[in-house]
Amino acid sequence: MAKFELKLPKMGESVAEATITNWLKNVGDHIAADEAVLEIATDKVDSEVPSEVSGTLTEILFQVNDVVQVGQTIAYIETEGGVAVDAPKEATTAANIEIIEKSVESAKETAAAPADFSVSDKFFSPLVKNIAKEEGISVAELESINGTGKEGRVTKNDILDYVKAKSQNPNTQSQTVAAPAQPAAIQQPATNSQQPKAAPVSVNGGDEIVEMDRMRKLISGYMVQSVQTSAHVQSFIEVDVTNIVKWRDKVKAAFEKREGEKLTFTPIMMEAVAKALKDFPGMNISVDGEYIIKKKNINLGMAAALPNGNLIVPVIKNADQLNLVGMAKAVNDLGNRAKAGKLKPDDTQGGTYTVTNVGTFGSVFGTPIINQPQVGILALGAIRKVPAVIETPEGDFIGIRQKMFLSHSYDHRVVDGALGGSFVKRVADYLEAFDVNRDY
Image 1 (spheres, rainbow, N blue to C red):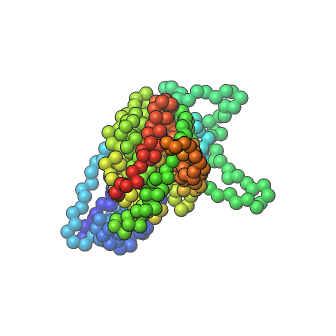
Image 2: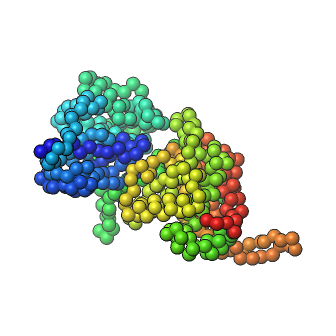
Image 3: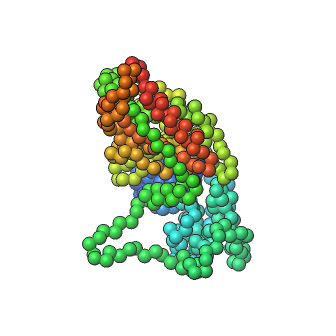
């Protein structure tokens, strides 16, 4: 018999932690190799953690809603045979974990009700919020901590340093208040922010009150944070896509028969966006404080609506290197796995620019919110038959054309109207110049 350490696996670039949402197995249950043991959630996507070995689950180290770091042991599985046991290691976070555990015990004796972070306009990660709640740190205290992360955000190390200093000197406060003080007329004492927020009450008794699910709360936080971070401005352009509609109608049956994939309009649009990003690399950037990061790869985010009404943005990596067949396969694969809840954390990481298809729901155009830390997002409107002026050598006449609107939202901190407008115009040019005789 041997004991195997089940650890939280690496889930992609920049994913350092996850929240346990559900244990699929209990202590004493037999587990087969590659069988899912628990469900986890990152700030982007939900997924399962399978076992690498067969055996019996003997110990669970974390409970539901606990935040776990990548590489941490989360359970032990007793195996039969000669499976090697991972030797206990002194992880670099051991000291921090010890600090948290000691502080939690003291906090349980003195802390008031958990803080309600919805009253704060600042963005805090799930890990930081979790530590703050366990330590009994009020919203006012958390807002006063000097953050060393992007845009002055409070990181795990920032709050751990604060906890450590506070435990050594209860009167310790952060050196500088990060947010400006509120006017006296609206300033609230710190104790009020710690009171649990009561659920709204239906006045007439006929209204249904439903709490947001975890993903909707995350989306809500991201949207508000993006609006507060970026100076949003929009450009709109109408595009004649008659040639694209005719070409797709002509080849879609043969395409599906040969490639085993449905040909939608999305990969055609994505192809044009990737080309335009190569022409205008100033749109393929991100912002970190006062620094601009020029991205080497073109990774297109594809906003996808989920059956439950939530939103997720899987990413097509190196989109400029794909032909139309490759783009169609990538779009269909990510879209299908998003609807089935089978996306992996890495599938939503590394995006450099995002496209959202608001036309799917009949919208003519929209004003999408930028997916931080990117600087632009393009909304594809519905394709409609409209009367249009057609210019010919013999003169102008009115005809029926297939048209759509492109809505481009961009960050005016780093993208001016010339670049933002020229980029969306280039996308339109590529679409209108579509070759009806091309192969796929």
